Length: 389
Image (cartoon, rainbow, N blue to C red):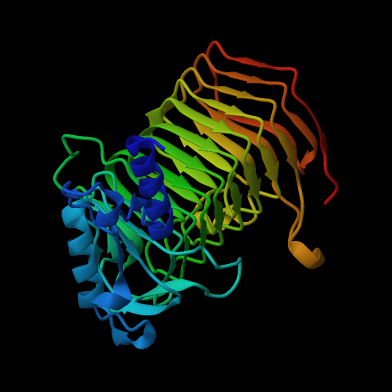
C-alpha cells in the first residue's frame, strides 16, 4: 500500500471515531502523519447552559449563568444549548451571528422541553435580539407572568428605538412556543429582514407578532387567542410574505396593517377573530389570494368597530383580492352569534381588483358594504349567499 493511501485511511478512521460535535469535526492529532503539526480546531461550537451554572429548576435565577454562555458563544459565533428544564430569566441579550436553541418538545397545550420563564415583572422581555445581526432563536418555550401583568413584557423583543440599523437584522425565530406575556409574543421594532416560521404564539395580552419594518417571511405559524390580534403592523410594515399561517380566536383582527406595500398574503386560514380576518388601510401593490376566512367579526363592537366582516379595505391602491373562500359560523360547541355581517367592507379604494371570491353562506347581511366610492376598481365575478341567523 502506498504511504499516501495509508495516511488517508488513517485520517478517515480517526476522524470517524472522534465524531462531529456542534457541526465541527473533532480532529485528533493522531490523524496526521509523523512530524506534522495538527491545526488548532475547537472540539465544539455549542455551549451548554448547564456548564455555566444554569439550574433549570424553575426557582433559581438563571439569567447571569445563561448570559455567560451567550457571551462565550458570541465570541466565536457559536450556539447556546438548553437541555429540558425551566429556566427563570429575563432580558437575555443574544450576540450577533449566534444561536440559542433546544429540541422543540412542546405541544399545543402545556409547557415542555426547555422553558424560559420571565423572571422579573419589570423586564421588557425574556430575549432581547436588538443588534443580534444574524441571530437565531430555535425550539424554545417562552412563558410570561400572565397577559394582564401591568408592565408590558414581550417574549422576544428587537428594539431599534433610534432608527433602522445600517445593515440587515436578519433575525430568525423558529419552532418556538410563546405564551402568557402581557405584551407581544414577538415585537420587532424597526426591523430589516426577518424570518418567523413554525411557531405557536398563543394567549398573549398583545399581538402574536407586532412588526415595524420590512423584508419579512412569516410562514407556518399558529397565532391564536392573542388579545390585540394575530399579526399587527406597527405603523409602516412592508414587503412581507405572509403564508400558510393559522390565525384564529384573536381578540382583535387576524392581520391588521395600517400602512405599507408589497405584501403577499397567501394560503392562510383566518378563523373566529373578533375583528376582520384582514384589515388593510393605506396598503398598495399587494395581493390577498387563496385564503380561507371563517367566522370572523365575532365581536367587532368591542373594538370600537361596527363593521363585522371577513375583510376590511380602506384607502388601498393597486391591490388584488382574489380566489378567497369564506363562511360564517358560531362558536365551537354551538354557542355564540353567527358572524360576520358582511363579506367585504370597502372605502376609497383605487385601482384595485376584487374578483373570483366565493362566499357560500359567507355573510349574514350583505356581500359588500361600500362606505365610500371606489375609483377605477374591478369588482366582479364574486359569488356568495346569505347564511341563516
